[in-house]
Image 1 (tube, one colour):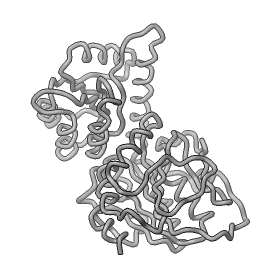
Image 2: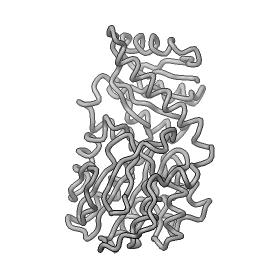
Image 3: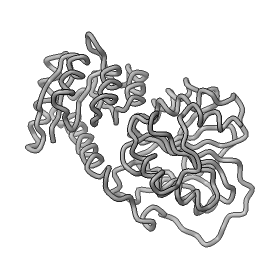
Image 4: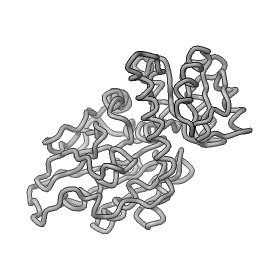
Amino acid sequence: MKIAIVNDLTIAVTALRRVLQTVPEYQVIWVARDGAEAVAKCTQNTPDLILMDLLMPVMDGVEATRRIMQKTPCAIFIVTASTEQNVAKVYEAMGHGALDAIDTPVFDEQNNTQNKLLTKIASIRKLVKQSNSGVLSKSSTQPHRSERRNTLLTVPLIAIGSSTGGPKALATILSKSPAKINAAIVIIQHVDANFSTGFVDWLNQQTALPVRLAVPGERLEPGTILVAGTNDHLYLKPDLTLGYTKEPINYPYRPSVDVFFKSLAENYKRKGIAILLTGMGKDGAEGLNTLRQRGWHTIAQDKDSCVVYGMPKAAIELNAAVQILSPDKIAATLLQ
């Protein structure tokens, strides 16, 4: 795996090199000291993965991520001194296509921070490898089945799945939502559980609607945005309460859009709106198709507005989308 490091601090570059050297398959092909240098080097030699700092001279990691994803797209992983102190920039970078974020590793006796970094890189490597492979079988994405249909009155529902570049698209859509809406909204964004709370805080700054993490056992609530908040998969149970499941355990997309969408098709009596936004791979395509077959209004983000045209493309190829729209037009559609 070809890896590039973008960081202006020598001590950070040295630390990252030492961690990467512990895995023979990882090769550092170049180092850039600022974002502008990274953009230039990427055009000459595009790596499989970039470890991108946020705060750098000349050009920061957010702008570098935006330019690289436009010109020479590749996997970008934010590695910075403090993700907690720079949470706004973390989600801005993720909006432009960064996959995940972690604090720069420090060396300790337990090697905890190094191990976390390597675990994250291994997950990204698996994600990149499987992004063009087949999606899950139908049986594996339906962890809990029941022949009994719940007949409780259900609220209008808007279900949104997103991944790479998703935060930016979500901000565009949610920022145009009114302060009160007669629908429940559930978001499945591929984001590590360590950042789910920060992600919710960031989304609360983008919309007048209240945003919070989905809690096991609760029900969908009109006027509230719930966000999948663990590394397990959020799903809707037959009794219309929410839960989390580890299965399918080897699926690289966590939390899975497919798992949630298919649980809606299985258990939610009322037809709602399902939206699949920008993202790497194919997660959500089969689920969106299943919902369309059940009579839902399904929307896929259009190619021109996607940071990564993977998930929507897979859905469109399945004829899963009733409409293909930009985030601005999706927002306008929801307001109708």
